[in-house]
Image 1 (cartoon, rainbow, N blue to C red):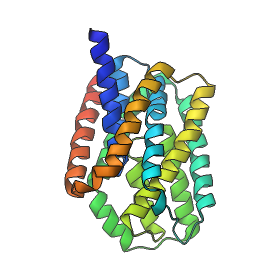
Image 2: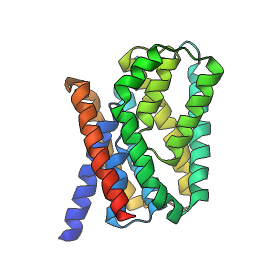
Image 3: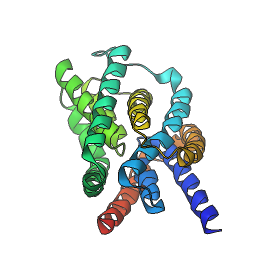
Length: 249
């Protein structure tokens, strides 16, 4: 009975993560801690979490497919290539880190990502006041995607902020391009994780169903939620999970 409850909670966590990722991102704030508390080793939990939320990116991208448009400074193939390169780099870094080091780093990564979410309005304003050269923005996007390949939490809001540096101003277009890059880097990183046997496939399959459903629901109904309340909710979840992760270390 406890086993069934545990599985049900993992499915619900993935559903919520898929819905959250359909907006600015942050679903890994839920799936990664859920898998850690389920008992998976840190690197396996991270790899399984990334695998679980990947189908949610696909359903979100399908909903926003008409809004996909790269900023003027970069082409769509260039942005996909940047995301792929970052995914490989981040996944390789995770393989080199190991369980003990990754377990120690995760609470700090979650804390930083939560702060980025909280500072999103200020970041957006500052980004709008600045202009970045294409090479600088390209390097920044690559580093963001490397972070996403290593630890998926919070990468969406970072990418959206960087798209502002490249002149992307329409929210739906930014969300759609974020979905393109997240789906690309996560596909690449998951392929690397799979090659090294880091994924718990039964749990990933179970949670992928929840993430797909959540991604569809979030994309369909998410914009009925005021961005302010969405941000408050993500910051609250991120803060709670960060504290729990620090207590767990």
